[in-house]
Image (cartoon, rainbow, N blue to C red; front, side, top):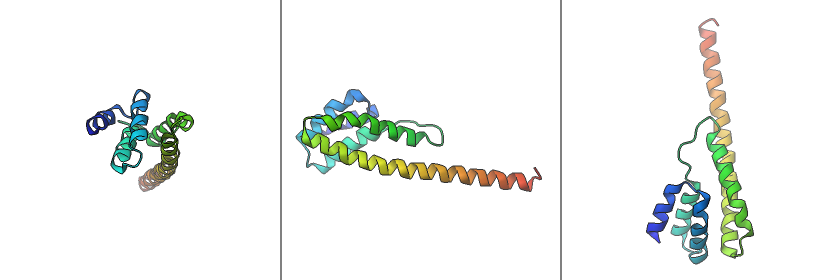
Length: 118
């Protein structure tokens, strides 16, 4: 199972990996280590670009989990509900970070332009 989870982490949470991940959740719902690795598999994004790239990537991850809420396996539904809440927190945190970074860049460039007499 560890090997399978390690391999699935390389697929950046693609939908083709969702069914094996759901089966792992259904089989090992109380194994915190495996559940953590499932989260990593789902959350891996690869490279993102743009100041809000991570926000968009996390929103897409959350949207991809919505069908899990209709899964017949209670542990899969519970995992999806909890993970979607975690993603909401991460989305809000990343949104705030990106906005703060943008504001700092705006201020830095405004200050540099003022010093140059522009």
